[in-house]
View 1 (cartoon, rainbow, N blue to C red):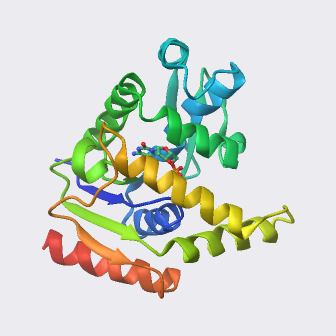
View 2 (cartoon, protein in one colour):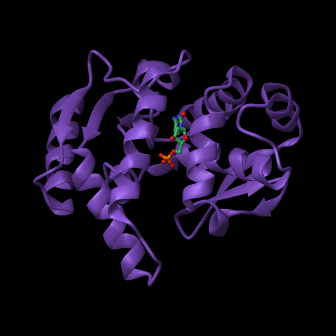
View 3 (cartoon, rainbow, N blue to C red):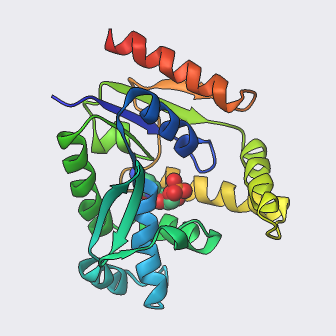
Length: 222
Ligand code: DC
């Protein structure tokens, strides 16, 4: 049986940075489920679909073939065979991913892929509904969060380091709106699983969070 570690939490809590490091330390595969929702959203943006057009979203979902492969340990998302990693991390794609992920057909299609990956290999999988819905029997479940201002500041620093323009007030407003949508949607909303360990990373460095999660994993697996 493969070992499954689920890390859920809101946007910008540091899930992917932490999950990637934990996976590397343990020799597991890192599965970024947000990237799958983002690839689906990119497909929809390319087709000029409005986030409110359910019929068009469901039609586009059928024509989007999403798969993942690993190159030098990095997850690469393929959209109809094209490596789309370079296009996934924009605010427009993130907002469309949050909006289109409320759709049941989108969720069902991506969940199937996620469950297959977790069955085949030891994984650290991050997202919004991993511990509650995708892998309810995961060996370890973490709910990783941080205050909205802290998360906005991290995103702001990331953008300015890349020389991109950024407005911290707008970033925080977007984060709060995204949290609200992800937490209040009908299907698989973001929430802490009953058996998940709550970690607030607001006042912790990346290394401290990794150490904290490693300790939780060691305790749960022993
Ligand atoms: O983690 P992220 O910011 O890359 O995710 C983008 C959006 O995808 C997020 O706002 C909601 C959706 N998502 C989801 O509904 N379920 C997941 N397991 C992962 C992401």
